Image (cartoon, rainbow, N blue to C red; front, side, top):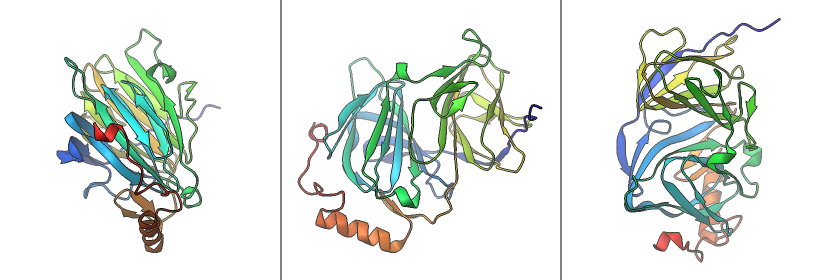
Length: 301
């Protein structure tokens, strides 16, 4: 027997207000702001726009995964382990910082092209994986599969950045369970149901148009993060586009039963682990061996 589709609903709605961040970037932060914390396993969600001459020069990480998805323009990255590359429009980089890395993320500005825009999501790592070696997975725009619930000519496209949707599965394999979808609707009033594992934390972030969730009658507008319910028996989420050309991400992950101690780019589970991380960084050891000697090439430009 087929399981009945039971939709989640919105339990919290947060407007992401544009604020300056880094060296000249504009960021709309929802998860990780004062209004939306403790959304395990998610630590931070930034919708960024980076002006010419701005970016995120050399900085360290430990204890989290960062997912960078480019909506417009391109961004280059480089790290202390010798890894470097470019994330193109529609491409994604999944970086597991593990025990420690220093890296730089700098946008590419080209004459006649818009400022680079994208999403960066921080995901907490399970306690037992916080001290693994750093790792990457990168997919160019043509390597991310898409699902078309109403066929390739239909009004909805789902880019399956990770996880599975309507019979399509992403090749991304990463620590911790997380599904990440980019939904594009060409027509108002189009309905899609996306399955989500029961009990997982899930949210939607809208940057174009609007969306009606579950049995709501009114749509949620652009630049809002919608936290979804996670009640027993809810099998996924029903979404109806409130406008033509509506775009948003839907992300879901298994919550971690652990405390979060965060100090800037370091995310551990106890105060003592943070103190040890600061000591490791100061003493340039346990993943931070190049903390005081390495400089990125892109950060100097």
